[in-house]
Every structure is written in C-alpha cells, then in structure tokens.
Amino acid sequence: METFKRLKNEGNDFVKMGEYEEAVNKYSECMKLNAEECTVYTNRALCYLKLYKYEEAKQDCDHVLQTEDSNIKALYRRALAYKGLQVRKINMAGI
Image (cartoon, rainbow, N blue to C red):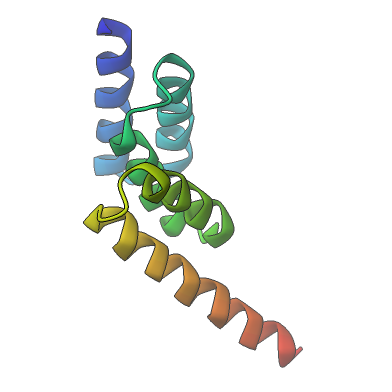
C-alpha cells in the first residue's frame, strides 16, 4: 500500500507540473497494484483529456462508472471526452 500511495502522489505531482505523460505512467503503475481504486482512473482520465486522448479518457471514466455510477468526476470527465471526440469527428469530416 505504501508503494501505491507513493506512486499516486508522484502522479499528482506530475499533474501539477503539467507533465501529463509521466503522470499517466504513474497512475498506470498504481492500477497494477490496486485496480479497484477509482481515483487513479479519474486522475488518469484528466491526463488523457489534457493530452487530447479522448477515447482513453472515456474508457477510464466508463470503468469507474461501472462501480460508482454517480462519481461526479467520472461523469464530468466522460462528458468532456465525448465533447472532444465529437469535435475531432467534426474536424475530420472537414478534411
């Protein structure tokens, strides 16, 4: 559990510095230790949104919402992911 907390805190620090790829890696390591902790999924979803990886963000939010169907962060970030996917779809149609 100590390793999990350390990795999560390191991920949080990377987010604060705007180092989203590094944060994704830390949160992914956390998931290997505890796949049930929803906060690492919502945190990683935030990073994916910042990296314009909308499908990945949506998947992380979907995972959380399977167990916590009223998780506000997951609902909000999934909505942002859907919005990003729609904008990308519209932009691709114009190419």
